[in-house]
Length: 173
Image (cartoon, rainbow, N blue to C red; front, side, top):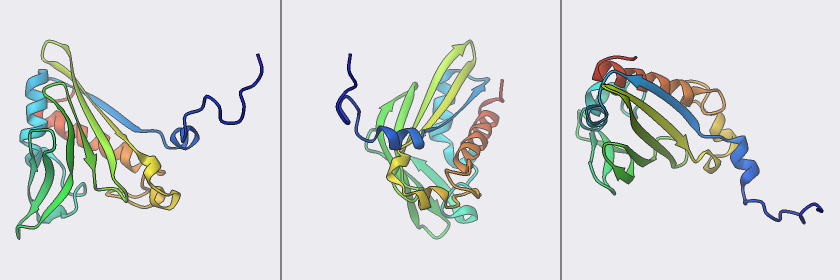
């Protein structure tokens, strides 16, 4: 069996994708799947740590998550300004949703899954992907936390956000 010809059998962009793997985080919460999903979506404006994880920080009055495919996810400031976080691409309550994420230097994608793993126990997992859209410079830029993608800021950020969700739904397990 000989070696394949140059590039044969390779998916275009594979090398880039391997250099920029998705950010993955998860948390186990003491709550059933439906309640956990609904808390994430319906009360995101209450539990989400808008400082530092938003455009408006302390000016944010609310965060709205429109419960449908094509729906907007956006923050509203005290003065009425709206800033889009993204749009819902996949809507499968209470198991998962996928949305664009407009808060990075280029549009990326966030998937949240909610898996019931026992009575009153749900594993919430996030996968933030699409980093190949960003240049090396953009990947190193600070986001809400210093260090950007390359410095682990998104990994730490999602861990912090999921801890806030866990506290809102009844605690980490």
